[in-house]
Image (cartoon, rainbow, N blue to C red; front, side, top):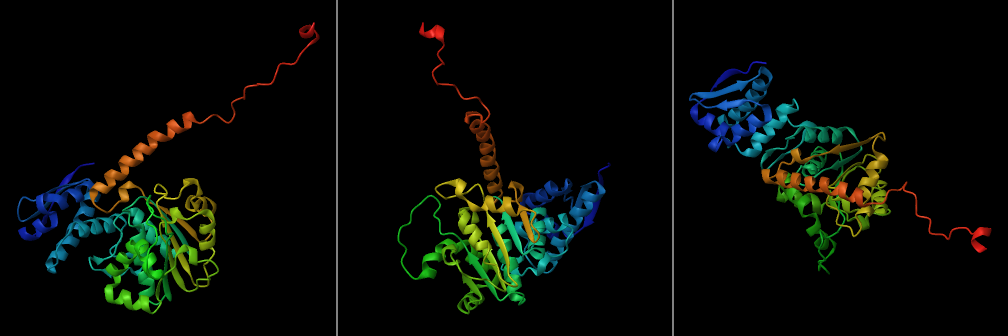
Length: 342
């Protein structure tokens, strides 16, 4: 297929804003759509096949429109625009709210599938490495439901398990003891709702923290429930929290199976629950990979390095494990015969 050029006329200042300092944003678009982006003056020159040029052109036009409105273009804006074009969406699905950094929207195809699952299913598992947006998007979806009045409460639950440390006794009431574990969720909520609205809704009980240990015996009706860091739930805890769903409730369970902080990794209830429930009506499982990391670009490379090490370690562990079908040595005394005793 020929790689024909296409020129998009833009004012020089808009072209510079769209392609970024040292063409950083242009490089993101080139990697995403397999095109070449040049700025010969008076606009942007795209080289690639027709479909690739069309995708890159839509991103450039979206960013140019942002500059026309007097708004700054950041790397996050570029990634959002790329993600929207990749999944064929002009706006964020599911009525996601706008945060301090603009409209919340999927940045990768996996994130778009995750949001679709959240909109369609009563129970969704979001599995994947750190930085893939699984918790932030769940919070954004839940906040959108709360703001539109589709649920009465947003409930967040998380196991209080330290990451390899023992912090000892924590002073204060229940909120003060649990808040340190909830910090990532609270940061996402304040980013989306603002500090004042988050505080008001929490004081009214519309936003509630519910430690795993305090969930037993409750029925959660007309609520959106987020179970975060679920890889640190035991099997019994996972069964208990999944069965809290009441009328009009929905739940998302997020976790990274590679970051289990329990004393025995095999006790984690997350993988066990996914294995049991994957394919059950009303349940969806969304999996993220290293390429879905949307934090600092270095995070993706870190995740890939750890995954590569894990892939090398698995064959060694399998070789060192005794084979189940290997015959055991017979250590019993040999039977005696008349010749032996003669």
